[in-house]
Length: 180
Image 1 (cartoon, rainbow, N blue to C red):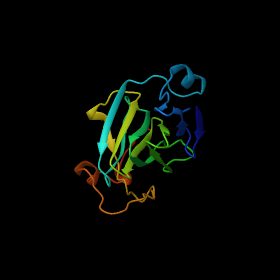
Image 2: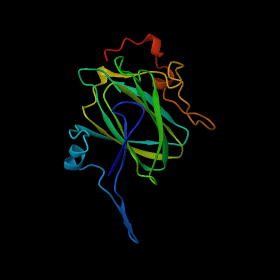
Image 3: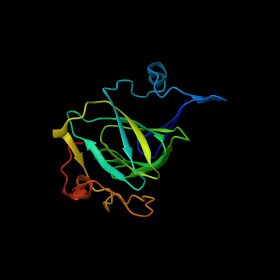
């Protein structure tokens, strides 16, 4: 397993060791002992699965304390452009973002720590899996505009964009009072 640090502290690209032959492939998407040895989180409380049509954008989402959550995400069908935004005021990369293509083909995963917002744009019809360090709490669920100028995210949007009402009406970053 290869783990690469990104420009944002704690946001890491995880590339599993993939074993393949004429039947297909096999890899471990999580192994507690290996994750611990690499300094990665090992306590996950919830697994989630989303399915999106090409052109859908989900995010930018995060959960507030005391149930902030880290996420380990991967795309198991199709491809997405995945983004993490650092919302931690004390971080040297506050308001900076990191983006990467995650796909069923490349099998890469992205680790997003607590205090970072997360979103993705579906480059194709896709299925997306999340490991979360806390259970979802509706009262602590928060989001911020995907196109907020405070971040300047360069989404690879082509064609019609599909957003939920929640994401379309997300607050501007300047209107948020974050406890991170």
